[in-house]
Amino acid sequence: MATKTNKAHIAHLSTDKKLLPLLQTVEPYELKKRKNVCLRLCASIMSQQLSTRVAEVIFKRFLELYDGNEPTAQQIVDMPFDKLRAIGLSNAKVGYVQNVAKYILEHKADDKMLNRMSDEEVIAFLTPIKGVGRWTVEMLLMFTLGREDVFAVDDLGIQQAMAKVYKLDVSDKKQLREKMLKISAKWVPYRTYACFYLWKYKDTK
Image (cartoon, rainbow, N blue to C red; front, side):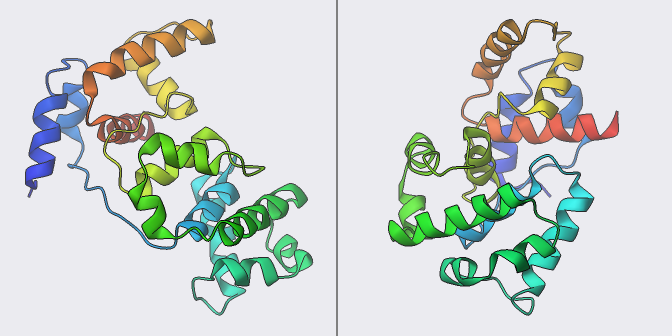
């Protein structure tokens, strides 16, 4: 059953007639907040440029290094480089994961601190970390902090889905981006939900 929030976002997004068919074929999406921002950010880095299945395998191996428990930032920093490398991470990704943990410790950042920040404040705070780009933080905003109005314009899956749904030309990346931003403006303040439906649409095509 749809919650009040679901009904609100469905009603709002339904005014976009090209998006409407997607809403009618996918189960309503529930945004959830998750704890341990440091770990979620590390997981996002690990999953970059990997299929969902491979990413899940590597993350499971990562947790097994800590007996199946979710590690703290300090535990991630303390894990030897070679052990992280052995679970299937590249040298660069091991460095990026440890960069995240060190940064979180140095800035004494925690879930409460990030939850108090606006979306753009979170992006500005985390993107100075080497290996963490805007897309990575957008995924964190959506799937860890549970923010309702995030639009991942640079996500390849979103680009491909919108190109099909809205018949957009993908040959000019700058123009494509501008058109996507213009279309997404009508989804405010529920752009995260729209992204979810577009991802689901792409997965079924």
